[in-house]
Image 1 (cartoon, each protein chain N blue to C red):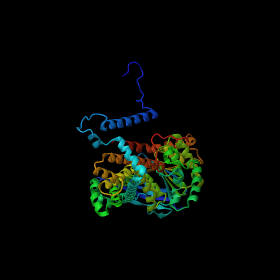
Image 2: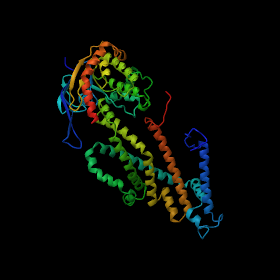
Image 3: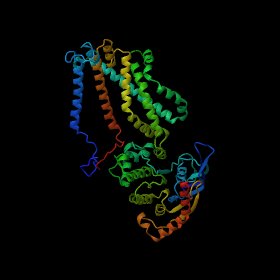
Image 4: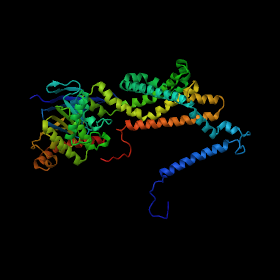
Length: 267
Length: 283
């Protein structure tokens, strides 16, 4: 089967702005292949270049070397098959929730009435019925994430790229959002690349967890298949023995890298 | 420290309530007017500083005559023509200055090459006291409305330009990347991301730019014209009629306050998406 997304031998090297001779290699020789309908999480210590990898997959950043293929075709420019959920606030503050949700449809030239109708349906699906006329600053962090999610999913992307989307939320809201994400995902099984530094989140959501080494020159150091049964409840599944086994196994592999990353940040 | 109480006094200094505040403000105005009246009246007090009892009134005007003059202006309808001219000049200067400031601001913010080349010229043009351009504008555009509008535009343009430039360059990278991933073309980015973001900075400077458009109009009228409130002031000054000069200043001030109020109203309607400090809402 043709993978939905394949990053082959990706290396990203940045030149320092002040001194062109100083180089920083964020990721080196990284390969990540995502099958259609697969939910893959990428975990690694902070500052290891996870977001860089996702930007490469989105086509926002061109790698120094390596190739990106989407459905078997080499990616040029932006990845039009992908939707991107950002870590930071990415809603347009001058548009209300409904107008934010339909922004992508508007860019594609859909008629306003039709787009709004669809937008309202999506607001309902993410539990924000009646909040369409609110501006982002009038919504809570969790609500804003829901709007972002609807904004991305309304375009029905085949691939969903998520960059620590829930990291700014409190733990209860976060688990709610994770469950909602799984529910939305199970409806039409998109390929998902989910970046996180939270191993529990990664295991409870994914089919597969990829562990990255500490930066610089990040590369994958382990891959784990998560054979937990679906549908899952992210809060409950964390208490099952198999989850704990998986967690112990992956954490064992990650621990040294986390310590390395921490030591680097202390310098 | 107050020793009578064990609790330290945490109350913030009390502000008088709204009604009382108004009364105080009114009393202050009355006190100033009364002092003005008493000090300039030729007959009320013996002259303190000037040897001639009429000199104080000559230099500082008399409040009653100022009021009389304003009353005459409005009763005869003479002032409306001049106010209208000043208003038109202000609005045109504001509109042209804002539109050109937005256009050039967006262009230079998105074209780093051009902005690098033009940088010293923009700095120089902004540093120049632009009121001295007035004589040139009189030569170019004559003594009618156009020269005042041109003067106002040079004042408004730079305020708007710098704000838009800043606004476009400070568009959140995440919002920009997100819009691109949602499929926005370059033109759509301009229209749906850069422009709204820049407009928020334009509105932030709206009070300033309307004020400067007004300054441009009045100064232009004062330096050479046949109509406008600035012209009235200039004429009165020519014959040492201080009362009329002061009356003109009062009318202009009231006019500027009205403009400012209109701007605030427009701002409140258009900037609904921006959070205000301490705003709470019932869900």
